Image 1 (tube, rainbow, N blue to C red):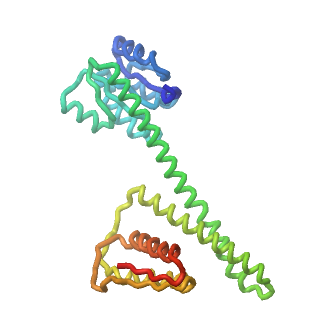
Image 2: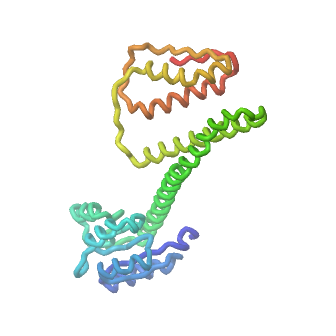
Image 3: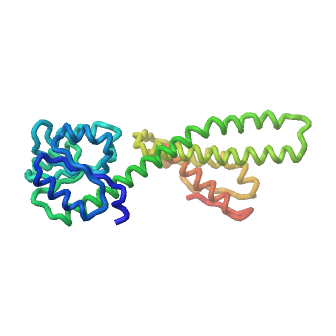
Length: 274
């Protein structure tokens, strides 16, 4: 399979027979693999071999499989490595100990070859998806951080340029265009920053407030656009409705919905929010 081409698997087992069985199984694939016979050897090999997945025995002299799991999971550089415990210990308590130590799955010997290969493929794909997802989040955070300051440096001086007495009408139109595009980029940066915060799972801080108060404020913020299109915006929302909400987020949602209603409605239209 093409998905197997660059995947690396590390076998950790002190029993040569078990290692031979696993290596024979992997010979039918395009995986790259290596094997070690102890937990200490595994931890020494991981930084250089950089496995995507570890097939790990539990009962080994010295450091056992549980300890190896904990050591791998404590290292941030190994966060995407998937660990499948392949062992003769099959009690529920032993399985739970493995999961608590950081194992992704558990397979009891004697195992079915096709089942193990299926598990390997599933967890390799999952590991790639998690890594891509993390890279995407890091990229979004980087974009948000690195563009905010330059944008402020662009938008700030525009107000000074507007006061230039000898500025032509064409020059003023260029300033308007720069400001409009800069604000669009700034909105994108703000949304990206919000997305990163949400994905990071920051705790929410809900509080009670009247919905109408926020709707009135947002309508006021949109008043210039409303007047430009000759739109009438009516709020059919009682002033007594109180909501427990994370208002920073809800305000952004309401402003987007109301802003889109103004933006995409025909001129001189009636917009009603109820």
